[in-house]
Amino acid sequence: MHEFSQRGAMQRRYLRASRTRKGLALLGLTALLALACAAVSAAPSGGALESRVERLSSELRCLVCDNQTIADSNAQLARDLKGVVREQLAAGRSEDDVVAFLTQRYGDFVLYKPPVRASTWPLWFGPFVLLGGGLWWLWRTLQRQQGGSA
Image 1 (cartoon, rainbow, N blue to C red):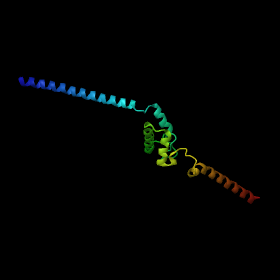
Image 2 (cartoon, one colour):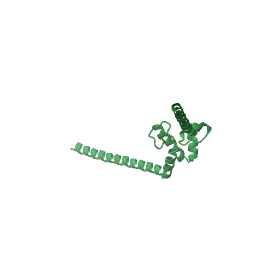
Image 3 (cartoon, helix red, strand yellow):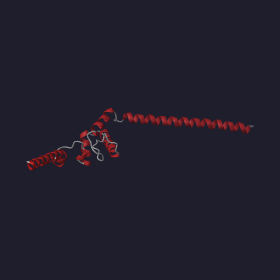
Image 4 (cartoon, rainbow, N blue to C red):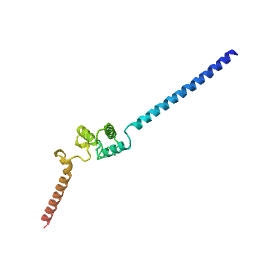
């Protein structure tokens, strides 16, 4: 009989220790969650930072998408560039600094509205030149047809 009472006492101690371990684990997880929440709330990633990230992301072109900003694109590279923008702004750099950094790294093509420079003239004036050439060709063709039928 003595053996059964010892066994019952051991089981009760084991159960008590098990509940204590579970309680400590739950307490540790709660503390980690509280620290993570405090770190997130202390980070400068508030609404002001996110609005700056979105505004700047709408001015930067996705390098692998057809005519989309990195704010509109779901491509992995666009998400990475948006993360770079967020990191740079969170580190205290200005929007001009971030644009300069990305332009230095990827060229003027990363800008959704590139500046007018000699290297970007085809981007700015190419469509107008092509339209003018097409209209001139159409006019000449119509003149030839009128001259041939008269």
